[in-house]
Length: 457
View 1 (cartoon, rainbow, N blue to C red):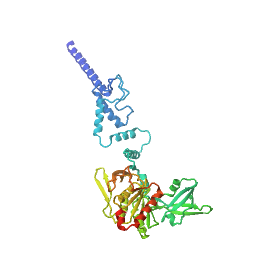
View 2: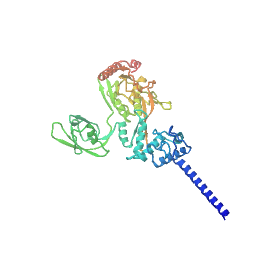
View 3: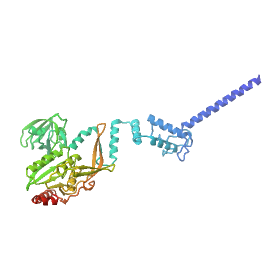
View 4: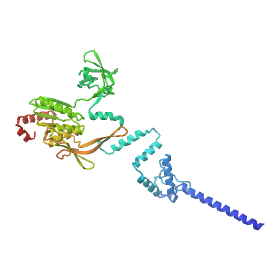
């Protein structure tokens, strides 16, 4: 009996020992996979299981959003392990794993990572569309280009209006006089002009709101609104107690960008304020009127003109240059040159172009084209020096990207960016500039045509 029972005890004991050994081995392996082991000196993991652990923790933390300030690469050690360095150094294995993830990622990994952390951990409100717009705005600002910008959908109407020099309103020009707001001008053909609003009256109320002591910007904001809507304007004549009310329908207002007049000595004067899309039509009408009035020479005043659309400047240049004359050279990112040429018809009047530091962009293109082709003498001071062109890209969210896409050069290869256009005749003082231009033109008008052509005017 004893011989029969002893083997059973030995077998049971052996089975129990094996069971305990496997149990301890299993738990030991599990414990090794549950916490990193730090050597306490370099911050590197001491065991092979630590790298796998960190990979799992990184993936789990990113997935759950549970990422404390020191969670990634600097986990607190498990019980009984040496403490991790406070520097938060990442193990070499974890660094290689992270580098692999970045290399495999598409798009903008840093931006994606920051966005993920913000969306999952930021305690305040974080509207996704605002985050995206902020990122887009920051991306463009990081270019360091003062002319490139992201325009949000809500800003697009104002941006478009600024490009076209137009706005929605009633067509009055305001001026501050002491604490009062006075109408200093009325745009011809505007709602205000059609209903008889006169310059010189004082604005008292707009839609039953008194405007005394308001800023001009605040008053202008009250007059603006949706096209087709109405606004009530109450004005008074200075020195009288009488008031008059006007009920005006708002419209898209396009202030004239051209003004012209005849000067003594058969000299025509043409001022171009900017280059919206319709500028060429106004310039053509003004030129025809001056020629009909007997102009034998022309002052083209581009002082203070900030520019506008390249196409508009090209169309105006075509009024002065013969067909196929070069207007501007443009060089983009691919270093390939594109050119814009005149469509004609051109004209043969002697022309002096007035420029100053406020002459910029498309205005510099026009002045440079006439100067390089010998179609005009440029007089004044060096211009602003904006020698880059922007392209407008509509975006899917309704916004707009304005991006610098090319540098431009005058037909004779002169770079404008940062330098400005150099006048043929330098005259510093404003009034003297016009007087000198008229003097030059009168002298040219007095010359025979052959001699005038030889002089380049």
